[in-house]
Length: 162
Image (cartoon, rainbow, N blue to C red):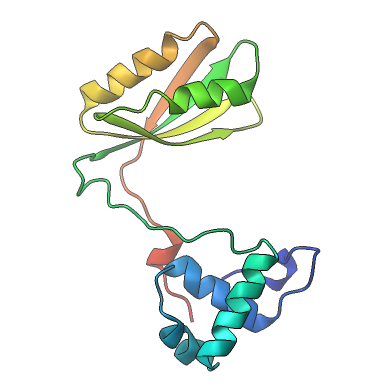
């Protein structure tokens, strides 16, 4: 659950705001009617809180969770990328552009430490992953990569808390 001390400095959020955010994080498609029942608020009050959180820049979008395996991408890999020089943001954009029908670059994070980028990839086959790795390594700015395969995934939304 989101903790009150994690609230932005703009304004302290109350317990209902935090519960609302927690419910939406679990399922962004939860109806205002269901949220009003869970939070013991009227539907208009729920909508008002959501609009206020949007105005404050706390709620910035609503999303879905894709079952990549059901789409035919059973391989989930994380690729650490070390670059030799240049702008890491440009490298991240070029790695994102390597997505194709066989291997999808889902996320690319600029990170601190020994590595420059952490790339999340979904692939149809190990050969498709290998081809994407080769494409990443072909960049003259890439000096090294390391790949980790995920065996399973648990999401916060998989664990309902009281």
